[in-house]
Structure formats: structure tokens, C-alpha cells
Amino acid sequence: MPLPPMIQLLPPSAVTVVFRGLLTFCFNGGTSCEVGVLNEFFTGQEHDFLFRKWIKSPQCPREPKIFNKPVNTFELRVNKPLPGFDGVFFFGQNPFVRTGASNHRNDFRWMIDFESDLYSAPVPKKTGKITPRLGINKGVFYTHQKTLSKFNGVPSSGSGQIKLGGGSVAEVMAANIYLAAGGFVEIIIDGVPVDTLSPTTGTSFQVDVFNLCDPSPHPACDFLPAHPTDKRKRNDFYMYYNAVDLSGGLEEYQLMAVLPPAQATPITGICTRPGEHSTDPAPCGPAGFGQTFPFP
Figure 1 (tube, rainbow, N blue to C red):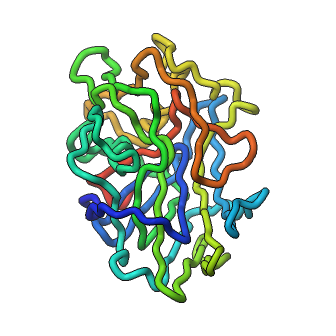
Figure 2 (cartoon, one colour):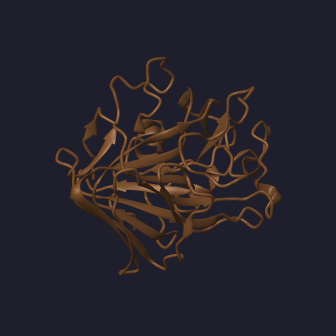
């Protein structure tokens, strides 16, 4: 399926969904988005799925509400969207060239898309590797924060075309949901409604969907982005290939920082807990499959 329509407006919204970590984005054109959670990791680099809500009135509270982990599916069902935002869109401004100087910092296309940035074709997938899955029926998807570090997609064999061109990549993705008067968002977990987001004057919401590796219990997730030989020590991008079927002869691409990498910068503009920090220059960010819907 194609990507959703591009929209060149990104006004502030009363509901923002923030995506961090090993997540996959698949779009059914402009009608819906499926965000999958990668669930297979290597020992010592396990990632933790987190689904939570912040109520800002207007500042971020001290702690968010933590939702139970879905078994199979969860959903953000938008009711009464604002006219003009009744559908799924991505934010962007043309021209977009990953290594260009005029790209908008929030352009959706900073996110690495396997089926356009790396392979230029649909990629075969393994089943059972992407779950639970989040469905969203309205929203404008965009990059909240890209890396300062630059990256190449390098074939594992060491020969062949290098992709990404030494440009930045998305580290934190987000989606703005725009509601008309009286509009609201239902949060549904495994078919059961568990919460409702009803913005009011002075109150807005942030919903987090995270799948990150905390170095505290997993020291192997304290990555060494300049490691010359071991992909497992540079960043966790290689784990996406747990869900990609390479048996037909596709070559794996490794995400390699262009040296010297930039230092990690704080994540700003969203609610965060103390100790939550940027993963640049070893980004743990979402990836896309822009010609696939749904993920198998």
C-alpha cells in the first residue's frame, strides 16, 4: 500500500502520540496506520515495551499513567476529527533530500523506510515477529527529533551500493491528532476500551508508545557507535532483520555512523521521565515499510 497523503501543515494539537524504539510503521494509504512492536531480541539487549499517557494542564505532570501491555492489539480510535484532518497523513515539505540543507526538521521522511530507502521494493517479512500492534485511524505523522549524527546504510558484505547518503535519521517519531469541538480519542486494548482522551481548554494529552533498551539492566545496550566490526555493538538497527526474510537473497544493511558522530542531545518538546535520554549517536528509532499493509 502507498504512503498516506503528504500535508504541509503541522499546527499544535491537543493529542500527540510519541513513538520511540524498535517499531514498524505500515500505512493503508490515507485511511489508517499500523504500528508494530518488534518482539524478538538478542540476549542482553532486550527491549521493554511501554504504553503510557500524560495529562498536561498545561505542564507535564511528574509521572504518567502506565497502561497494561496489550497481548495482540491496541488502538487509538479518533472520534470527531477536525475538518481537514479526517484521515491519516504525513507531514513533509518538498524537496526532501536526506543530505540536503533545506529539509524541514519535522519531515516524516527522516524515518528509515526499508522499502524505499534501502531496497526500493516490498521486502518479504517473517510472521509473528511484530506484535502487539497499534492501530490509528486519524493523525498527522512526523519526525519529532532527528539525529545530529549522520549515517550510511552499508551492505553487510562490504560491497554494493551504500544507502542513506550519510544523512540524519529519525530518532523520535510522533503523530498529532486534531479534534473538532467535542471530539475525543478512545484507547482500546485487546478489544476493551480502557480510557478516553477528551481535551479541554488548558488540557492536552501525550500518549507514548516505546520499545527501548535500558542500559541499566542491559549493559550491552550502552552502544559504541564507532565500533569498526560488530554491528551488535554499534546500535540496535540490525534487530529489525529478525522480522525481515533474507532467505531469497536480500542483503542486510547495517546502520553505520559517519565518524566522528555527534554527541547525544536532550529530547525536548515532549513529556519525559527523569533519566530518559536521547539515543543519538546510536539511534533506537522506528522504521517504516511504506509499500506494505498490514505487516504479516
